[in-house]
Amino acid sequence: MKSPVLDMRDVWLSLRRMPVLEGVSLQLARGDFLAIIGPNGGGKTVLLKVILGLLTPDRGEVTVFGMSPKRARGRVAYVPQYPRFDPTFPIRVIDVVLMGRLKGGLVGGRDSEEDCRRAHAALAEMGMADVADKQIGRLSGGQLQRVLIARALAVNAEFLILDEPTASLDPQIAGDLYERLKSSSAEMTVIVVSHDIGVISRHVKTVACMNRRLHYHESKEITEEMVEATYGCPVDFMVHRHTHRVLEDHHEDGAGLERAHDTGPGGSGGIQAERDPEGESD
Amino acid sequence: MLEALQSPFFQRALLAGLLASVACGIVGTYVVVKRMASISGGLSHAAFGGVGLGYFLGINPMVGATVFALASGIGLGLASRRMRSGLDTLIAMVWAVGMAMGILFVSLTPGYAPDLMSYLFGSILFVPAGYIWWVVFLDVIIILAVLLLHKNLQAVAFDQEFSEVMGVSVDTVLLVLLGLASLAVVTLIRVVGVILVIALLTIPAATAQQWAVNLRRMMIEAVLIGAFCTSSGLFLSYGLSDAYEINVPTGPLIILIAVAVYGASSAIHAAVAKSPHV
Image 1 (cartoon, each protein chain N blue to C red):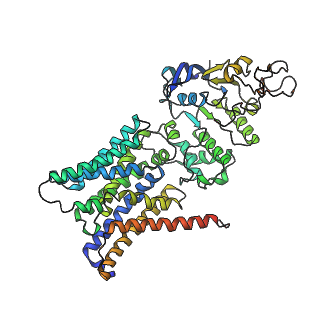
Image 2 (spheres, one colour; image 1 turned 90 degrees about the vertical axis):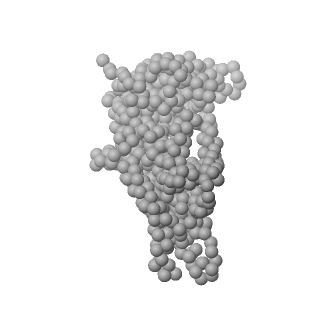
Image 3 (cartoon, one colour; image 1 turned 60 degrees about the vertical axis):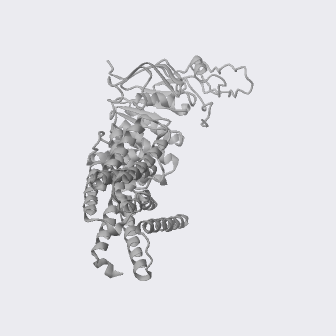
């Protein structure tokens, strides 16, 4: 019997009177590795923030490790989508990673040797050991993203939540990251929001589509209905199902449906998507 | 110029400037990186209400200033939890209400308030001995709080959301930060006056930020820059009066020196950044 890590039941949330989550239910057990895809503005980040206890739903129940999300803090690690902080903030990279070792509460206490060891190990794991003493503003976007992932890894949490962690990473590094998460996902539960379905589908165990509603069948396959419901038209998104079938063209002209290259049967899963139809412009 | 150092007046003024620089360098660092400058301006003007109340009740105006600054800081902190927008307006109100109350209390106080101008514009040359002790006391509180809480203060200033996810009591840490800003504001009131406090709290820290790699270094540099500005302002105003019989208040000189230091630092920083050797 797997122990439940996340249990969301019929969660609704509106922000500024706009519905963002509509009846979202999601259960995850230890060892699950879920990717959430969906258009920008579809509520993916909001869903993650509800799980993290940063937003409180209007209706519905959320428990993490059987507790309210706020009480489960410290057992969940998070990689935010965009770094919101000021690049001129005087802080060294290693001190940012050490935030993953914060003790919580009001008085934080000091970093132990164990904290420093873990922080350096996490940085090294992301291939960033040589920038440990640099000021954070001196990093490139991709380096910064790897530092934020290292910060989350340093937490050594049982539940890891990543919001677009690979948006500015090379595919090679992104692949390595997902491989690492996959290999440690036996004792960890992972949710990753990504547009990078081509890379991610090789690593995750299940995929969900999110557009205010969450379409999830505890499998890796994305059905036509899920895509349709999630993205609507135009669909610039290819699904290989059991045969090498391409989605029917939609009625609008120039909907931008791309022809899929046959990749042969089997493949790595049900999905081969090139990019998000909405792009990154949102 | 050196004979100035023998005057107990001058010694006391120098000491007041240096002690206030400690508070303003440490707290100013957080104020600058957390972008709380306008809140600090509100707090210093709120403190003026307490100065007026002190006169009215016949107690030490510095005590009134401390209470008012702390109460406004905590009030603004609590209010900002409930409101996502409109904090700016609230700060403006606290700012103006503080001044209004100060003026009202002083006008209700019988007799003449001789020191009033020195609270508005500062008069470091005439600080009473009791003020020095009060600043020492506030410095000690600030240093102890920062030693104890720096890790979380830094985390919340840098990335509030992640700190929250890590279980840091973000709301309480922010209240502590506002409390520290209130205390730092009070230490500066007699040095440059409530109107100019915001400048001395932020300019040395902003100058330090151009060079510092971490907050600890930024604090040390900000304290040193603040100490330089207050002392050189003092020497300059003493020298002008001694040599040319030009009497200018010290507070504005200190601020202008601080701005000049900031300008020079920015220019050097820009030149260094352009240089290919770095």
